[in-house]
Amino acid sequence: MITLQEAIAIAKAWSDKFDTYQEYADAYEFYVDDGELCYGGGDRSCIIEKDGGRRLPWALYFMDADRNIVKVGEPVKL
Image 1 (cartoon, rainbow, N blue to C red):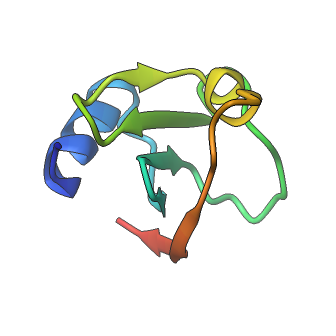
Image 2 (image 1 turned 60 degrees about the horizontal axis):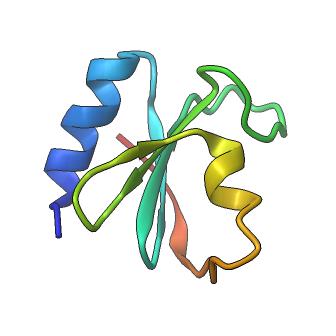
């Protein structure tokens, strides 16, 4: 299991614009909170799995029918 700080480093290496994260039971989602409601796509978000630190595209994580997605808390500013 990776730490939040390790996940932040992985996400920031992909895009230093990420300013917010949402924790899930098995992953972290990093994104830019620009006040607009949007879902995934391109570099708008980055999913980092807690088990091993693998970076996933938004769709691969959220559209996986076999995955039980459990939100932990509320979004947090970095």
